[in-house]
Amino acid sequence: MAHAQLDIRFTTNRLANQNLVHNSYKFQIKSSRGDRCYWKCSTRNCPATIDTYNNIPTKVDDNHNHHSDRMQLRVDDVLERMKSRCKDELTAIPTIYEEELVKLRDREWNDDTHQLVEHIPTFYSCKHQLYNERHKTLPALPTSVADITVDGEWTETITGQPFLLADDNTNGRMLVFSTQKVPEQLII
Image (cartoon, rainbow, N blue to C red; front, side, top):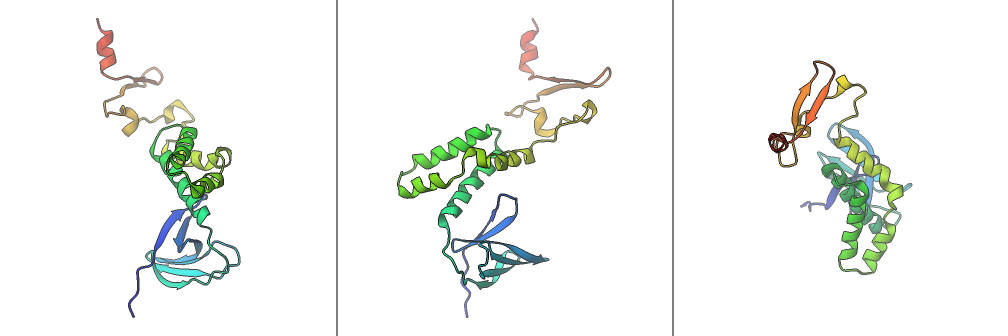
């Protein structure tokens, strides 16, 4: 008997846990042992389960006692794009939220898109998720001057030019940030 490749994908929920999506149904991890995971439908009291080994389905019991919520999956995709942008960009988070909504409105506006926009949570209700994603990429705030470490991308401009010119700790800590062009222009 030939096995057809199942259409599954993995997503991250608002608590940063992994979900599995199959046939427009969302599953959450019930338990795991090594590379083997046992998934249950995320709808309470639904008997549907999926077993995976190395993220490949080995057993599928697709016996759901409810209809799939395709709209919620689409909302989750939009929120996932917002979170990804919050992690990858330094654009203001309210701006990212608005830009993603505008992208939805700019496409062919139809009833499905209108419903999707209506189901997307307000900025106030999802802002903590978005800010938490941003904080994952930013360094922790130092508690003292000695805790300040500036290295890697934080010592360069967006174009890769050196930006940290001096880090002097002889008479108290002093950091000097500037590009090479500015000091050259100041010298007369």
